[in-house]
Image (cartoon, rainbow over all chains, first blue to last red; front, top):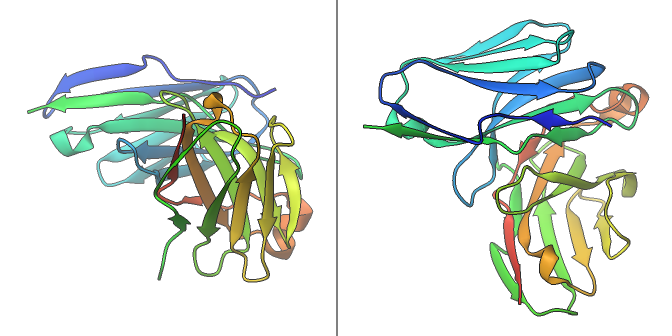
Length: 113
Length: 120
């Protein structure tokens, strides 16, 4: 059974800091890994998707990396801004015809002005 | 291009009642998945509908059922509500198509804003 862990549960940083959010998963047989952003009480917004054959993906100030063999992914946020404050969730899609998304609990990020 | 829409936004029910939540997928998508997100937790997969059939199911009791219509929209029904059913219910759509049927759905899922269900 795939398990996804995100530690720490919460993080507070000053504006302008570069930061890394971590995600680990137990089963390396994955199709892809996706990072989402969730604002309080809202739905999920997809940030980056990394296919199992890829090592990283970039979008603006965000960079996500994937190391399947070690079961880890990181989301790097450059020059953080107060508007980046949200919960960041990592989700892994398992392989097979019955593949599904398994989510971590998320990391709640607060960027202080 | 309309994204994924869900209705209602908020809902308050009492224990034992039944509830129906609705989802319209993103234009061009044919697959709908439902998730339950309890406070402080990540979303938990309930089930997925494709071609008007339930294709996959997570670890949820039979009180949770669903339906997909020919226009790909979907409903989630929960019977005999419990206090523990209080959560944000998220709908996600994706394109499965013929390739997906053979190899499994690997496309990006787009999520709706969710329905906040409170059971008193």
